Amino acid sequence: MAGRALALIVGAAVLALTLGPLILVALHAEGGWSADLSALRFTLVQAALSAVISVALAIPVARALARRRFPGRRALVALLGAPFLLPVIVAVLGLLAVFGRSGILNQTLGGFGLPAIRIYGLHGVVLAHVFLNMPLAVRLILHGWQAIPAERFRLATALGLGPRGVRRHLERPMLVEVLPGTLVLIFVICLTSFAVALTLGGGPKATTLELALYQALRFQFDLGRAASLSALQFALCGAAVLIAARVAVPGGFGRGLDRAVAQGPAGWRMGVDAAVIAAAAAFLLVPLGAVALRGAPALLDLPSSVWGAAGRSVGIALISTALTGGAALALALTPGRWVEVVAMLPLAASSLVMGTGLFLGLFPFLAPEVVALPVTVLVNATLALPFAFRILRPAATSLARDYGMLAASVGMTGLARLRWLTLPRLAGPLGFAGGVTAALSMGDLGVIALFAAPDAPTLPLLVQQLLGAYRMDQAAGAALLLVILSFGLFWMFDKGGRRA
Image (cartoon, rainbow, N blue to C red; front, side, top):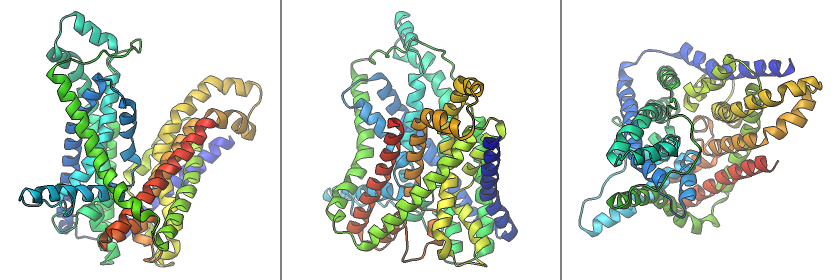
């Protein structure tokens, strides 16, 4: 009963933090919808283009990884998970080092007397989203490929099916099942990508709803327009999340004996697979390598403001992780459909929408900078809850199924059950969920942009400010520090959970 009561309290808090700001936004909402249609159109267009291009590029990469074995393959597949945890502002800095005005690509084009390309605008926003989301699409599609039992491929070979036949009877049905969900998921992610639009968008023709919301609140102080934009953004994200929840990804190939799939076809197809894998690896590694090379010399000569901002970010990440871990565990251990609905609800709200609601509620009583850090902690903890819950829920369900009756028969309840059964058995998923939460919180550049005082930014906000001031070396050094701290926290929590 105590666990259920705690879950009810956590659920009420999540509902208050998610829907409360929305109600405050609705109370302040005014007209002006027609003036923001261009932002709505750009938001939808960039998200749709980003999702389609990311998935289209991911298909050949996933197929090449699925049918080839080579040294370093496991490390490359693991690297594909890194962009999800990589702070967005660092990814943008890496892309600027390659595709920016003084980047590697434009210097090469200049050497051949060709005109330079510009990264700002729609194509820059789409490029950044493809960089961040194409690896995620590869992982999801690769999982679908690996779910096809090896026995099916051997049967296809025995029946004399060539590559075209395998593609028609095995690969195409799998893609029909996997691609809709992957497309919608990336579309939802791109709807709320504030940092990319802030650094590479801008201007009347390249403004997303979130960027227009930030400008209305931060620079114009137009509360009515900010409220209208927040309501529109929440409705858009909510509709997209509902669609994503309805797009099922069933597994239609049955079970196999978990044998390894035979090496793919030889000849020119092997060369094509090698080229595809090399191009994908270069697309991911060159921007990150450029940030590391430029930031490493400046790492030991960073101003004190960077270290202060780093301390604030680490503090926010640790407190957010503690709150998210406790809330996710309480909900994951509680049976019921309502728990899943409450835990996934924050996916429909972006940090800027939640921040706008809290700003509207707190501004009459407190200066925004006074509550910047507590508000950032609460918003980060709430937004990370769906990811932590999804990691913990399957393990918690298995724990209840395998040990629930035994624990009840010996009277193991309350804190004793938590200490001797739940925490030891869920230490691994808890550590992984903590690592993901800490990394996501370290890289967040949403609500803090609304509340922070100019002299007290977090590390991602400081990197964005250094970029805006064209202090590129210091920005690269601070970005490298942000990457080290983000992945360091992830490694610390994940490793700690697996050792427990």
